[in-house]
Image (cartoon, rainbow, N blue to C red; front, side, top):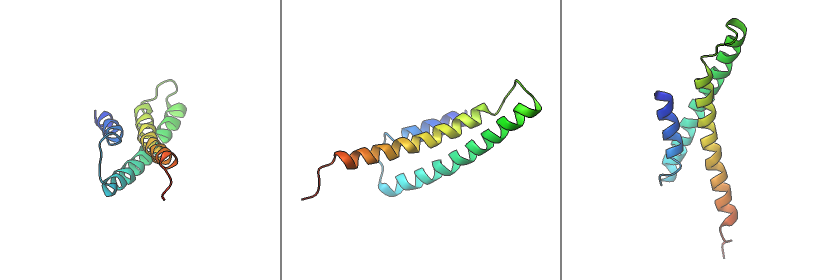
Length: 90
């Protein structure tokens, strides 16, 4: 449930217009938390593959971390496309 709320908040923050300082704070938070979840998800998958083959309970942690990081990659692509499409200053 918490992982679902995190993913919805990360992707929903891309659609809501926010001040630039709020976007920066959210991006740093989602990048940090997503990195931690991805790291623990990879470590858990590695542990499960060697200790209990066939059952991995860390897949949701790994997937949530990846989705949090992908939301910030989508924001970066959105900013780059906005810069490329905008007209040059006079």
